[in-house]
Length: 217
Ligand code: FE
Image 1 (cartoon, rainbow, N blue to C red):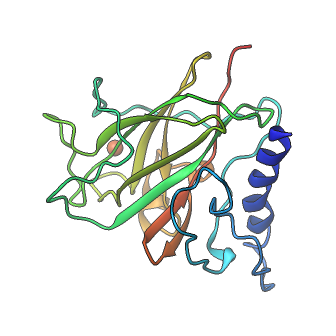
Image 2 (image 1 turned 30 degrees about the horizontal axis):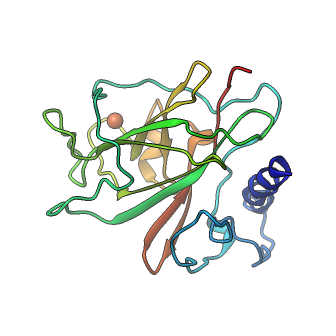
Image 3 (image 1 turned 180 degrees about the horizontal axis):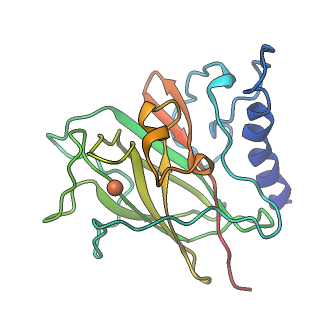
């Protein structure tokens, strides 16, 4: 039954995204938030018009979240934590959340997820672990990271680096992106399939991305 529940959740942004290219007024129902799940500890975010949402994962046999370059700034040994916000850190609060699922939309529990990104000024911490961390998906494949909006640096659009490492399987290294960023079109690495759904809430920005990764039986 869980498989179908996950599939239903993943269908929500896909349904909404189908409205993005026409002029019809999208239905105000069922924004693709995770607030209705038991594992979501935060208050229900204030919905915004679903037309602002872009597609995330598509569960189809053989269709995986695209891999992208790790880039030059990955560091091993990041601390396990669910928030990258530390005292004195400047920036706009951002929650990144979603599911890790297999290509047949089954939840991938206990997958290690590494996150690293630039600070609000576009700089990486290459000596310590500021804005670096890892966490594990829960039994439903759900993850939730608290951080800040990454800044821009020369040659790249706004992005977050991610590794998704299931208990079994090859793992995925990729990057996620933000919608409506002017620099997306000028970034040769940017992939529209990796754009997060983003909404403003009373508690900051909420981004959702569902990762589809291969797992070994
Ligand atoms: Fe980067």
